[in-house]
Image 1 (cartoon, rainbow, N blue to C red):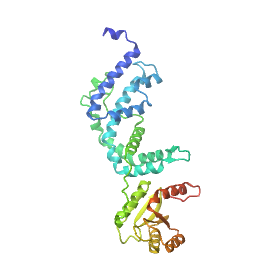
Image 2 (image 1 turned 90 degrees about the vertical axis):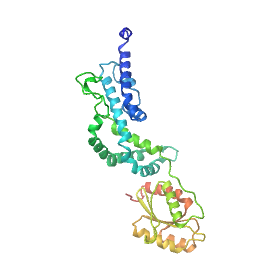
Image 3 (image 1 turned 180 degrees about the vertical axis):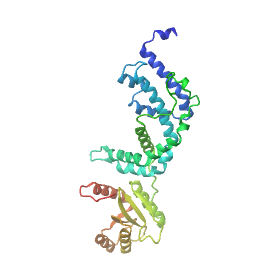
Image 4 (image 1 turned 90 degrees about the horizontal axis):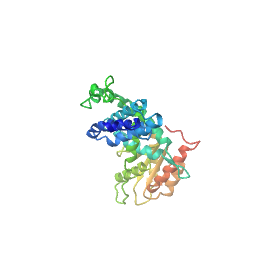
Length: 326
């Protein structure tokens, strides 16, 4: 006690903030929030620890407004971490494959090898505003009482801020909460493994080959819907890439692909209102098939060339005179 009398105000402030942080740890450990809490605090304190953040904004004293705010942000960060762990995953889990595809598609490397993330960040903003935000706020409203009772000793009389203030354990959120949520979704998507593309085999059945071709498109960032067989007007795969719809027919042949495939995929293009049409094969095409494809504006590709085709499609979509896609 006597030794504390000779401490500077800055040291006393550091000690009290450390004690305050320790008082939050039982809650953090109970719900296994360590990583998410640390990330939430990093956002709240602009990448600094609480002490450094206070020093950058004011004097390091217990009477400082920023000292009080630091404690509030640590508590709010704990609640944010709880929501990131318990409320958020069910809201985005069904969209993860789409988000991973969007990340691949919208992260662009320029001619100098510099990666540009602007379009991907814009997509995350859109996803949060139109998919996550309302449902998350609704979840919070529905669970407000439960959130306020997370700490069993939630007693205003025992508040570390002293009497006359609401208990520090009452539910609140940090001012940067939306940014914290977007950052969490981006982290989850970034850590997702790339989709596995099954290897090609000459022994694949026709249906298996269709799924193999679809996986090649998906790996390149496209969304695919494999049809279920007859009655699909010549369509095997409906591909959507950046709003550009592509009708695809797959031919797994030992011999050359003939003119019939060209006619069928042309009909599918018209029926499904696609911008482009393509026949993908492991084999070559007959001269008559190539002639018909040129006349009807049908693309003919080997499955190994799908990634290269997507790159060409990117350039076309991004060109000033490119197509209008939704």
